Length: 243
Image (cartoon, rainbow, N blue to C red):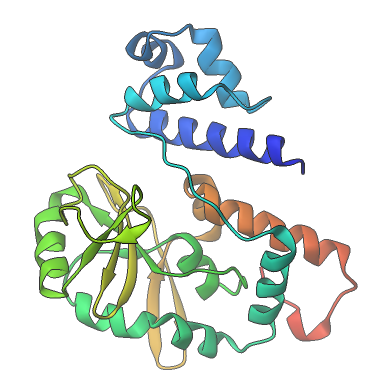
């Protein structure tokens, strides 16, 4: 997929997700952003990359702002996915430090989501942080946990952790470095439907893959890439049954 098409698709998914989360029609979003309904529709169709001013106006209607990030070249990403596929799932979980963080979260209501949920369901997708869904009503408890875990929030402006308030309500990416490892949070009104997967002696409550692909553009793109590459390669009996 050309980079321009990929970016347009990601922007479209983000806009549809945020609009749906707020139960807004395209016309209502257009009125809030001061643009036409047709402009919203074109962005959501993902036909081409919209202008930066238009993206900023649409995101501002959600009280969000545009942030620029970079990721590895596709060839490097493919190599990393191949390396993950060659490792046992138990080793992937251990490398992420998943159990260490979950043991400390104790009774904070949460679900595993994003690339972490995909990894636990067998997909060799890279993830640099444990990803969880947390309800807004539990944000005070979450903030207290972050404070006790010596959390530092990701500062996109300086591309480092620190210098921002911990609270999820404050502007900034929902990503923290804690004494137990990196953590990303998807803040939501209600926890999504979950399934239970078991590895070794432990069970994990995770968002199903189909829901991950609908709600997490980054994880969805990794899953699509994994499936495209698997479809292009000869079948490997040892990997049969993986997503």
